[in-house]
Image 1 (tube, rainbow, N blue to C red):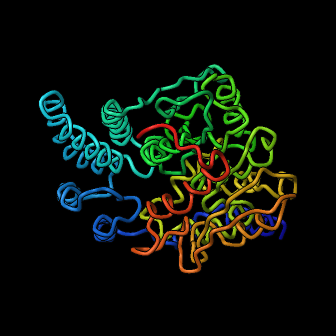
Image 2 (image 1 turned 180 degrees about the vertical axis):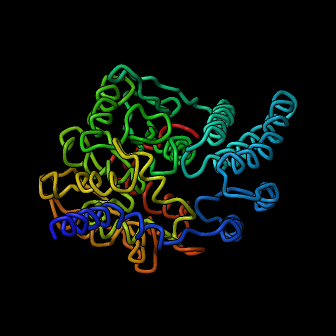
Length: 409
């Protein structure tokens, strides 16, 4: 009898340990054919993560992809992008405008070749080539882009700094933090639009992504505190007028910084910030796996960026520790904030946004799209670039340097 009970107990333990994996398998990701169809549709409609990609280039790459192998995916997009990169190099002196267009095209194709995260040698190569093409494109910018290396815990934080041209005295600045699968290159392209307002930006990859020196953990915000130390030491930056913008997963860091770095921040805009429910086991298992708003590999991408996570059981154990409620932060004083979101978001629960709006000590502003999904985006009505231009940039300008329009593109 005792032996039978022991066997039953062992079976129960094994079942408990494997339940999460079984659940995950039940939530099916898109097939390769479904990914191809959806990706082309998104390219045709200017939808993330294919904003700015030519559908013809996407179709050409897909013609070479027969399996879900990550290196095969990367190689197909690298082959298409290489053609534009080679042409750009050839034309750089004779036709700089065409060369710059080719560099942009190559960068975006390479970047989709490493999407969502560079989790294989081929995707790592695509990411490296994406940075190469982007930096070649950025050489055409005036004012220039500065690649900054900040010493940090035996490694370095790599960021992009761009300041308004002909600025008189220290300028306001936005610290822009990337999301799970976006990168500082994307943010730099977007935030160049704020320079004519006399405001600079510093774009950086969030923990666990891009060139960040550390992975996600409950204390990883220390990386951004180090960035703030650096920015406040730059004589060109007005240390009393620094704001933060975080997109998606970067909005989590933005929200946390609005609390822990409140004294050093003028304002924070957070686009679809996770706060509490997002990190709970049931929500995670029900929202990440097979999520159709995300193109593919949502859960694997997240698992790749969190410190100490090698499998789903690790994720279930560590993810809840990131909750801003469990860290006893929500409810504390915050910097002024703009919260952006969509009621139909399937990646970050709208209840997390409500939680942030209803906590703290100062009034917050909100832009909530009742017909919007993640980041508040709505196809054809409120695409990402429109939200950025009409909502985010004006709010940051108003809070940092309204009326100061010195500088040039």
